[in-house]
Image 1 (cartoon, helix red, strand yellow):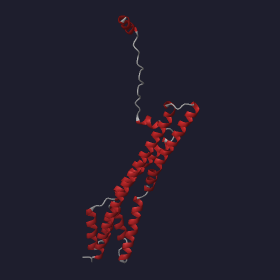
Image 2 (tube, helix red, strand yellow):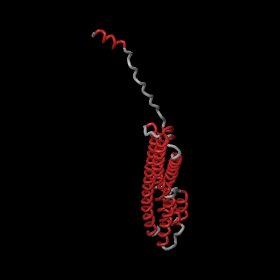
Image 3 (cartoon, helix red, strand yellow):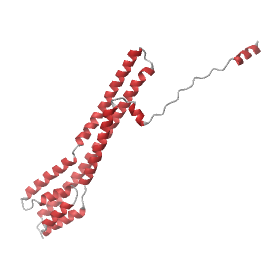
Length: 229
């Protein structure tokens, strides 16, 4: 009896295990394309943020240039009464400090208060030039996550629509909408965070330029108060 049972067990064919579906490796571009049409404005905002950052970074870097030799040369020329040479040095030098000094030298002979006023006004103009388009970068930091949340809503609508059509709540039915909302949400938040970091970094650089400009302006005014040699 036992031998017949063993023979029956051995005669039963082994049950084949179900083949596991192969996991598809997706590139970053393919993952972004899964986000749907909402990814178009998000990608546009990311490109705009990078372009604004690079342009402003290069402009602020140029504006922050200060040649110590230029500062000392200008002060020496002022003390010697060689104003035209001092103006020439400022006109050839790059950076916001040189432009402010050049404008002040054109007002020499006016009351010192007028010279201080023109330097303050010129400094304000230089700061406004450095801050150009930074508002757009701040706007991108705020708008990009909103597009991500919009993608979340669209993905949920898509999921519920598929459920209503198929009358089924299986994972295969709702996966497409969930995938779309996750991609758009992550992309929008990532672009928003990066844009805010770039905005903060550029503002920090502007603050440093302004501090340097104020120090140099005070030193310049002290030189004007001193009598010529």
